[in-house]
Image (cartoon, rainbow, N blue to C red; front, side, top):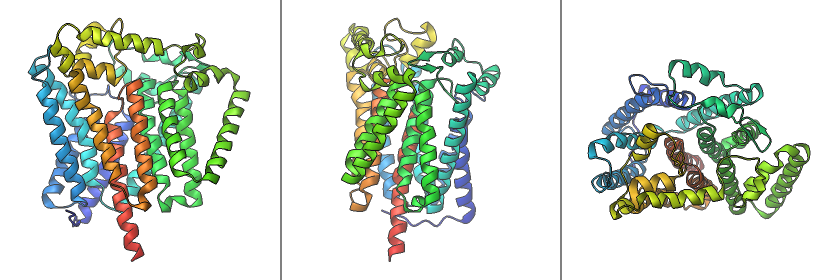
Length: 444
């Protein structure tokens, strides 16, 4: 059932600007910044959740069925996750409840996005905020790479140090021609890559809205998308580049017409040929992405994950769970990976558990893993299929490409910036409902 919005102007302004403030804090403030053990974004997230509940009680929202479906799934999802805490083999209920808090926080982001974004003005305010943040983080990313330093993280680390973690090692790490890896406003290039995946698809999605197809917006779109891709390249994270490449290929095949496909294909070949011709030192890096299954393509010049390493880690995952059937089916407990790393440091085989397969199966078991990850991705995919009108085809395809890219990134590296992924998905989905309704009203 759809409930008409009757929110007063003051309530609209509060929601819009609080949401903008949250995005600024969440993206620009590193996770190690704490105020009484809570990050600033977590504190604001709790406040926004309470504010969203207040709006729900007073009926100040639109598209109630969308919010209802999300809340119904979240309750169903969380009840199943909570049930796993009684079946896990190693951790107690009390130990796991602490880490369930992070799951609740993860779902708060998409929840208050769905409740607070209600009008065309809300959509464009949030979109413009995201675009400004893209420019800020990418510009600083360029500075970090050119200067070979990260002054911002260095200053933050003076006041909020990260124990047993040397973020400076990435500044001088050479990888396939890259002279250092960029992490921008985060503490790790892999974290930054996870953020950029969501920002790239948010940018692509809103390009399809009619008001953004004017010349000035087209120029701005290509400029922002270009700096996002360059920053993703400078992270040196092959999983990020490969996942986005797969998603863009999906969009290329499903959205573009034959003439446009030829045009884009020719331009892409020219660009890559020029890059390889003028930047020969990056050739091995690009080859290691294109032929990701072939470790020989890295020619010993690229450290990090390899196919052989991942296979050994997969074997190590099941070796770790082979002691009893309970661990294999239901895992060692939610939060086990974080507790292990905090106590012992990197695992001798699994290292930092850099994949949702390794961390998920170990913590939740085979049964729990399929509940925690595939079930959620299936639900989100099912929601995209509800955009089944002919005019929504492009938006549906971009959302599906986004899901595929983030799933690939998570499988290869980990679900970094997981709340941002869910928040961006919710925002993109709700935005289409608002913009489509607005366009239909204008046609009448």
